[in-house]
Length: 298
Image 1 (cartoon, rainbow, N blue to C red):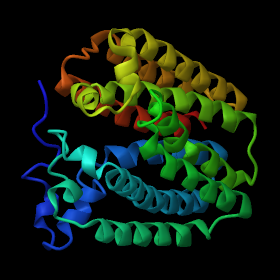
Image 2 (cartoon, helix red, strand yellow; image 1 turned 45 degrees about the vertical axis):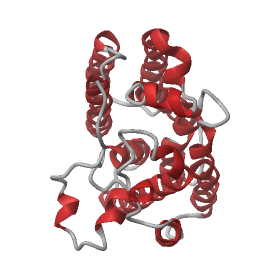
Image 3 (cartoon, one colour; image 1 turned 180 degrees about the vertical axis):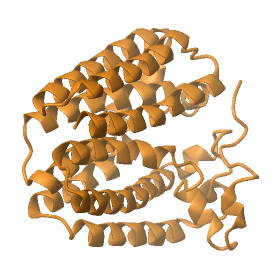
């Protein structure tokens, strides 16, 4: 079972003016799960670091806009790098670049636009957060090329997607401490797990075009690796709770996270792309439960 395309005919993007639509598809505006997974780890840090209502509103708003822009920029870089590969993969061949709806130069201009506005937002923070934000560009730019040189591109994705943990903590506290590093490390393994599950949707096509992934490397052993990675993630969440002095309700919320992670491991069918997609999307709910647990735990 494979996907014919990852661009849906009934997407809300089709209601936008025609010239905007291909840019919306390029930035994946119709699939907010990527924005959600990028935003949630930073919100965990912010919510755990302050109870000031104004700071919570300000930082959450800035990080949300930044997540939309940087997720779009990451997708743009990815599609620019994969333009020729995407044209050979059934699920991605209708994307704006391989289909010809946008030229490479138009995509480049859109990338500069997104990065420019992201930088304006970044300048609203302290120096440490600005430095971390600039440093993240290295990861964002490098990730799309990792699947050409290593079977572990998901490791680079894990480093990139959860960089917001460090930025959120630095934005509030103007420092990085042990608690922040524990949460970042755990979130890294969380991303390793969910993106390996996601990668099984394209495993056959990736093999045919010669790109690499943990999904290809691990194959039938994926389930046991995902179990270990999710277990490390859970241990880090518990450790983080103790380090920042969370109340009992936080740990109750983590038990729900544990149940959702265990469900993914137990039901994972790497031969069923649609099921892998459903399991991947559960992680958006995990991010939300994490935010609520931290708020209640405070």
